[in-house]
Image 1 (spheres, rainbow, N blue to C red):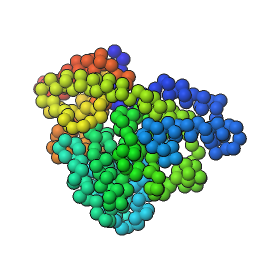
Image 2 (image 1 turned 90 degrees about the vertical axis):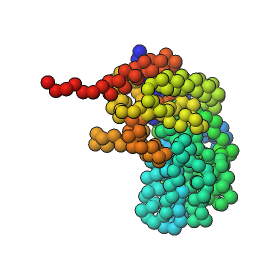
Image 3 (image 1 turned 135 degrees about the vertical axis):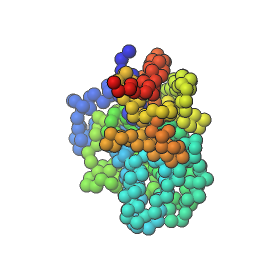
Image 4 (image 1 turned 60 degrees about the vertical axis):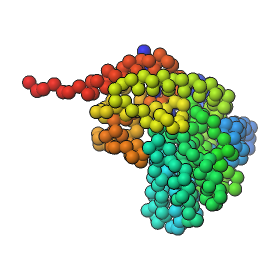
Length: 383
């Protein structure tokens, strides 16, 4: 069997239909969308069609969609914009397991004098809405709660928190990068003020993302120097990448029910097999989750070592732990849930995509126990 890719939360393969839509804009259909001649007008029309398709996917209006080069840029833009507006006064409230593009940006503001409050998730991997809402004081300048956690796949109570934020006049950012294209997302129903998505998480290209900004919500540009994106994001648009984002959004909107059904069936098949491995613990199995994400701990192994063995055997998975200087470190998400460091280090994430098959899942379940056994086997005594 060819190499099996089971790391779709990191990035997804480009859909051939998306590649086909992008191809003309990488060749003969070049043009700067800000130019007024025919080439420029064609490029502008392509960008605006992509904007409309993204808006339809998330239930927003096209004029509220601001294109960026990545979800990281979009998250940074919102958090640092709030910091500029607040100066050194006030606080930011966020979940303790937000994506680093939010956590680190908040830390930068904390160093400038803002108070940063981090609300931990419960043992089910879900941030308790009541605990988050309790931190929304009159001094709060921004709240940040991701829609789906990138490591665990757990869905967070964004709509409930958003209602409380509106009542208190607190703007809410939801990082929906892992959720868009995998579960239904309606910006209006969620009620956040800012919603971030990225093309490469749902079979679009790298280098194309967007932040939906509710009409009337404030946003200071992170990049300045041009009037693109209504003055909110300077820089000539990457037309080919944005066309790809638009096509990926169109396909996701049309195929989402089927994708969810098929991916859920594959995940259930995977987790049923992993549950038969002695000592295996599937994190957050009873919580609302993305349909294609499994996070599992195996006792007496290091997730990083297991990852490398599976890679050599032809399977790509990931671990939530960062490897620094050759030493695995505990996942911040799992530590925030209250798990012991040794369980965190022994965990891997398996995230599925539309290209995976039941045969690939079965092959993985055949190899996994063998690799676990090899890691647990005591080293031979020296001669």
